[in-house]
Every structure is written in structure tokens, then in C-alpha cells.
Image (cartoon, rainbow over all chains, first blue to last red; front, side, top):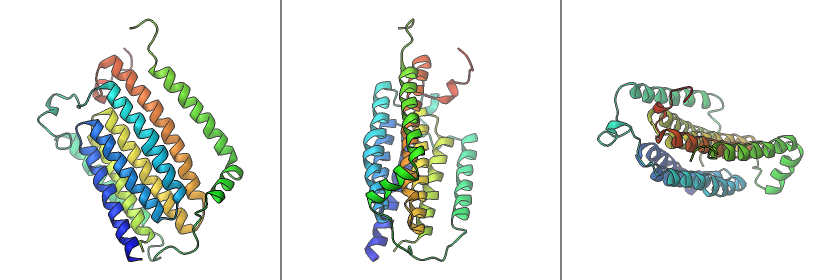
Length: 175
Length: 100
């Protein structure tokens, strides 16, 4: 039990630090790579939560597919820096003005979320009951109770694919 | 053994980091990455609650969230490519015109 708690804190610390570094990087390529590290830590947390299926698709789909798509676009655009004038001398997180209000809003949101999420059932230690860990049980539920949502998902993916092709296409007249 | 509240607070921290990224950064790619951080924070909440309730629904919803995130990333990045082609910039402040 002690090792589980230690692992939770380790993975949680990696996720938080990597996410903080994601929004602190000037170069988006480093942001993408750090986000992959954060997703790896989240995958470990899913294992701790007895959800191996989610842990595996977190690695395969998020770290493997979505982040590669991001990396591909970052390298394709080849625009590493934020192109505001004083980007080079001032760190993007340390600019003054209305951005400070943004940081305050995020801090306020954190307080509100913590309050709202931990309001109910705070005293329950550990997790009661058995966990649903088998992929077979998840698949059975996915293809029976959630069959309609699953089919809608396939249409969503098709629409997104067609939309991405149309949006990123060069118009015939321009070069 | 970590309790539910610890997972929820971790998720709140990650969501706030993602929100701070959207508020503070002026780079379309980083903003999209911050949105991914927020989606993952919510996924962690779903899995933690699903584990606490002993049901598979949390994991199934995470499956759908990931699908929507993939679609969002594909369309969002296509829009970013289109915008970059027009203005040679990733700063959202340079896309304030409704028409060009």
C-alpha cells in the first residue's frame, strides 16, 4: 500500500511539472515532447486506478497518434517562437498587463474546482468495491449500452477527417 | 493507498494549468496543447470516479473523450495550418479580422 502511494505522488509530480513546463516553453516542439512525458505519467496513474485499458490507449492514441500529429504540424510550420515583438527578451509567462488577470483567473478556477470536487464524500479512504479492469467487460458495455454513441463516434471521425483535408488544402487558384 | 480526493485535486491542478496556458500564451499550438492538458485532467476525473463507483462507465467515457480529442486535434491543426498560410503567424492577435 505504501508503494502505491509513493507511485501516485511520483506520477502526479511528473504530470504537474511536465504540464507546467509545457506552458512555459517558448519553442512548441519542447512543449509537445514534455506533454508526452505528462501523458506517460497519467498513464501510470490510470494503472494505479486499475484501468489498464485506458492506460494503454492513453499511450497509443494520445502519445502515439495525437502528439505525433502535433509534432508533425509544428515541424511543418517551422515557426518556433511566439512572434510578438518582445518575445525574445521577455518570457511568455512573465509579460505584464492583462495576462496577470489570466493567471489570477486560473488560480481562482483551481480553488473553485478543488472546492467543488472534494465537497462530497471526502472521508472515504481508499476505493471500496471491485474495479472493472477486464477489457472484455468494457468492450461488452461499449458495444451494447453505448453502441449508438460508438457509431456516432465513427461519423465524427469521418467528418473530422474530411474537414481536416478540406481545411488544410491549398486553394486551386493560389500557389 | 491514494484516496479519491487526491486524484481529484491532482486533476484540478492539471485543469488549472491548462486554463492558465490558454489564458497566458499567445501561440496557437501551445493553446491547443493546453486544451489537451485540460481534456486529460477531465479524463483522470472520469477514471477516478469510475474506480470509486466500481463501474466501467468512466473508462468508456474516456474512450469517447479521446476520440473527440483526436477529431479536435485534426481539425484544429488544419485550421492552424490554414491560418499560418494566410498570415505567416501563429499569434491569435493577428487573426482579429472577420474577413480578408
